[in-house]
Amino acid sequence: MTGPPHAGSEGAPDGIIPLFLPLPARIFERRAARFCELAPGHAVGDYLAALAALAEAQRVACQQVPDAPEGRDLPVDVPQRVAEARQGDAWLAPLRVILSEMKGARLPDPARAAMARLEKSTPETLRALAGALLTGSCDQIDLAAALFVAAALQVSWTVLAASLPRDAIQCGDRGCPVCGSPPVAAKVLGGDKLRYLVCSLCAAEWHLTRVVCATCGAPERISYFAIEGDQGAVKAEACGRCRTYLKLFYLEKTPRAEPFADDVATLSLDLLMAEEKYSRGGVNLFLLPGVQP
Image (cartoon, rainbow, N blue to C red; front, side, top):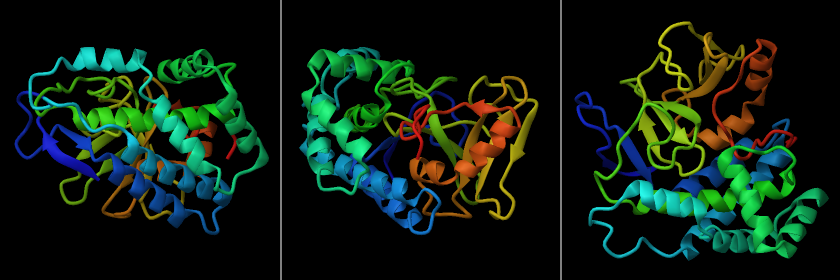
C-alpha cells in the first residue's frame, strides 16, 4: 500500500499519478502477510516463512525509527538528503531491532551464524557491507549476513522516502526517482492497466509507460513470457535489445500480490528466463546472487 499521491513530474497525462510514496509500517505488514500466505506447500516454503518473519521484524523496526524531521513541508533538497542517507548510519538502528526480533524466528543454522557475525562486526565492516549492497557490488561479500543488512537498509530508506515533502521529487527515465535504485518488479493495475515500478530499496512506486523496457528504455523488441498454467497473473517483460527482463504482477488477476514476496515465489519464471538467455533487469534484496532459497 502506498501513501497519498505526490506529483512527481511535469506534464503527466491526465489520470496518471507519476509517483506514490510508501507508508512504511503498512508496507512491511502487507509483505509479511503475503510471505505467510505463499509459504504453505511451496517448494521454497521454509525460505518464504523465514522472510515473513524478517518482514515482520522490519515492521517492528519501522516503529522505532524516528519520525520525519520537523519542517517536512518546507522545501527540501532531495538529492542532498539522498546523498547524506547513502553516507549515513541511520540504518544501524533498524539492524539492531531486526537482529533482536529474528532471534525468536525459525531459521537455519547458517542464518543464525550470520546474525552472530553481524552482532560482533565493527561499524566499519557493517558500513562496507551496506555500501556494497547500495552500489550493487555483491561479489565476495558475506551474502548470508547481507540479507539482514539489506532488510535494515530497506527500513531506513522506506522511512526516508515517506518523510519527503510533497512535490519535491521529479520522476526521471531511469531508476527510482527517490533513491535511484532499480525496481524489484512492476505492478499492473486493474481496469486502466497502468504500470508502476516498485523500488527495490525504498518501496516508492513510479509510473512507466507499458511496452517500454524498464532497463534501457527501448520501446521495440519487447516480448512476454509466462509459466504455463498461471492464468496470466505474472509475466516477464523481456527486452530483445539489452536482454534483460522485469516481472509484471497483474493485480486484476492477483489483487494481494506483493512484489518482493511474489517475486521470490515465482522463481520458476526466473529459471525459464535464464533458459531463454535473459538476465534480471531488477533487483530483489531477498534474492541476492549466490543466495539459495
